[in-house]
Amino acid sequence: MVNPDAQFERYSRQIFMDEIGVAGQRKINAAKVLVIGAGGIGSPVLAYLAAAGVGHLAVADFDVLEIHNLNRQIIHAEQQVGKLKTESAANFVGQLNSSIHFEPIAEKITATNVEALLRPYDIIVEGSDNFTCRYLVNDTCVRLAKPLVYGSIFGFEGQVALLNHKGSKDLRAFFPEAPNPEDAPTCDSKGVLGPLPGLVGSMMAMLVLQVICGLAVPKNQLCIIDCLNWRFSQITA
Image (tube, rainbow, N blue to C red; front, side):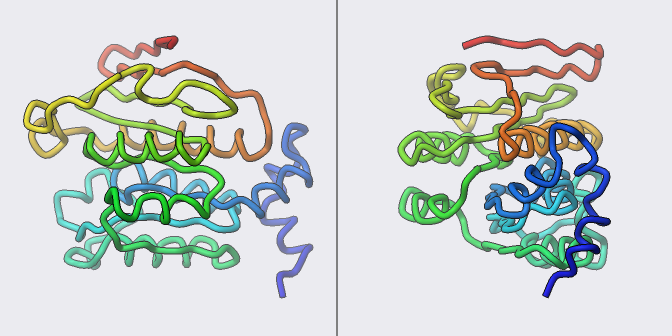
């Protein structure tokens, strides 16, 4: 049985915030969040949501950890190279916060299983590295009326948005169609500095917690982060 005094002490610094309080922390503890991808973006999202006490946290990823992932995928370690990312993610979360329920889902998201995977969760976080998955998850969230926290990275640029939340626009309002996969640049082909996905993932985790606690959130906006020139801008759909 969880010790209420220990729980209060653990989360006291967020409970002390007027916007969160005990009621907000209870919402966080009761929330169910699915993170798509345990990579550069998913790593900080998982870390901060686990630290905040999201009661039921899951990650879907079918990749095996490789040594080149470690410059940005901060929840993994050298000793776990060659293992499933979901396995090392579970190890990280278990050591950080053993009081929450963590569910590793070592599956590739497809048109066949996507609805069943997304349906049990309150909020979906999209941190995959391919457009096919992003649009599949987006369209499924629209069908299931699930809020979607979206993020992407490339080079020095990141994008963050809260989509499909209480009637707000979805990904296709900003980008109607996915680009041809052969034309889309990736971290594997163009590279990325590790702090960028850390920044994007942290912003995404903040959005998730704001949604859970019922705080004001940006609607119909895509935030563009240009780290090379230190510029933040918004596109409105």
